[in-house]
Image (cartoon, rainbow, N blue to C red):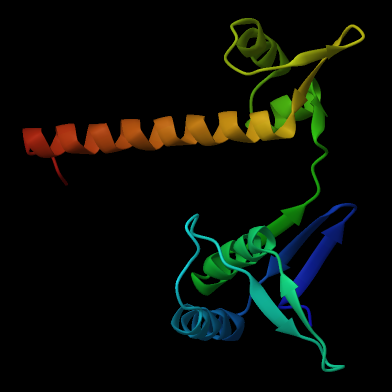
Length: 159
């Protein structure tokens, strides 16, 4: 069953979620949280899926984590976009993913701020490194914003 409406293009799909589906996701998430029992030491747990033919299969913990994340986003009314990203990226693709120019990316590579390797004469980046850089940059931005808010609070400038 596809939730909401699905917009698909090549290896990317975006699901538009209805309010009814948001409520279903909230209820399901609550049921899973109540029923799951203790987590493993790394905070993950598998999920058993009952198929229509009576067979039950276990979803690996890592995949269940992805499904849990999607469920959390949906239950909070968010939109989910699923896309395939190759494990190795060109500098042009990596720059687009980071929202920066290719020359800026090349400077970051040259400064050792994001790892890359050569394939012939071309630089390539691992998608996991690009995502890690993006996530670290977003966290720095959040931290800077939080610092600014604390500074405003100290000065009594909260509006």
